[in-house]
Length: 633
Image 1 (cartoon, rainbow, N blue to C red):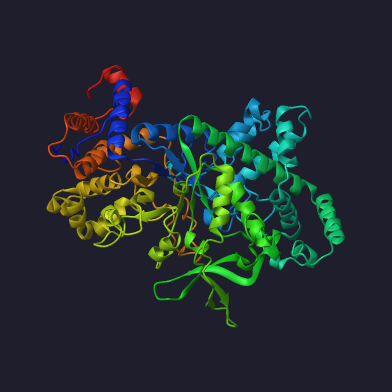
Image 2: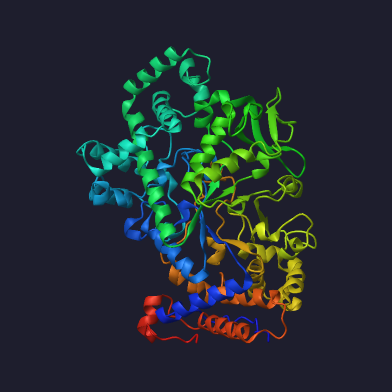
């Protein structure tokens, strides 16, 4: 028996409590039948929704709203992993999380509302919290879909315009200092700062010197020892004396940074623990490069005037501007040299913060693409020998030390690009790998393409439709439907003509294909059927600078009703439909077993409920039908 895969497109309603319990059971059974393992939701911190009454202008995975969203997504989509973007410090001039710091967490991610709680000593007065909320001057509709970076971070480099987030944090810091020394929060802070953390000390010194010189671009500082404090050329007595002077002259900035890192680290750990209690693994996004502050702090561990980039389709160099560690001074995890110690510290901290990880542009750890600037300032590729397993041995060593029951598949290497396949083979297929169906063709990009590939394990693939931050499935449908429909139809045993002419059927098939693999991921925008693109580079026509709208997409707090309304229009991830497509495509027995037929019938009933005319929240469904109503059985 093969359950009809046609789509009802009129309306979509929420489940009652009883129906949702049944729904979670049958989707779990379907996942077991398909052999799925990790299903990940990709969402960047700033994208998370916030209740209007608490919205300071930026989202955070540390918030209660984030926990609410993830619980809903776990119930509706059977996700068991949340993959975040990088969580480092970003600047007023560059909102990209991929430009941030590798060690320090961004102040903008701190959930201010928690600082008004007794657990945090009520260090942020309610009035100050409301001031930060009221400063979010976007329109009501904009607040739902856009991050207010200019208010949160500040608009320029003027010291007084430090942004509403840091304004509130400075007041919280002042009140924190007045807490009794025996308070629980003070004791936690002492443990945090007394734990040897080279990165915390150096980042705090950097913040102090940034205040002194008025910019984080240390190469423009007019004091040579400040510029080169950790380059290894000055006597230790000279360095120690200067460090003491910095702490004395700019103690407020120095201590404020330590306070912010304590609060951010505390909230990050609490968030991770909360996810774990809900059986959700937290995956981080490991930056491939280092920030300008880390270049200053560990200058002697980097190559001089060598940068990281990539090659464009026309073979020109795309300059990323990231400094490059001295790969000739790595050593081994057992006996690290200077550059090796820096990488070791970076990976240790990363794997302490997360249960799993995605390594951005991971080919740079295996076959690095480096460049220098010629006399005219033009980037020119710098040939460099392959690293083989030299850096990946540091990754593995740190992961094994810090992640309980670590498996190499827990780390997904992003190996997209011109020589992705060659780089993949050089890892000897030991690690998890990211692949996309966005570029599907006869030989690459489809789940089927990996099933019988020599030397490659489909079980280690982590496959999604697009990457973590680029174009949405809604946009992809407009560009690729005609081109990819026949491939999907052939692989999934669907009608080619229908897929090539019906956008809803095509999108359902793209989702369904992912569940024929063991591990799959979805972006929050695709799940909700939205066209928003988190990373949409562009130039502002007025300022002629990168658009401030980039990296600003958010989702509304009313995500539950939005999800069901989007399903009513054939948008978003309809899990019963996707699982049905995958089972029909993957099951070999014909006819299906009685158990499989029964499961497919229940999935179809769940799909039918999702196609009814409202209501759009569980609470409303319970009021309309009774919480014990169950139309799935």
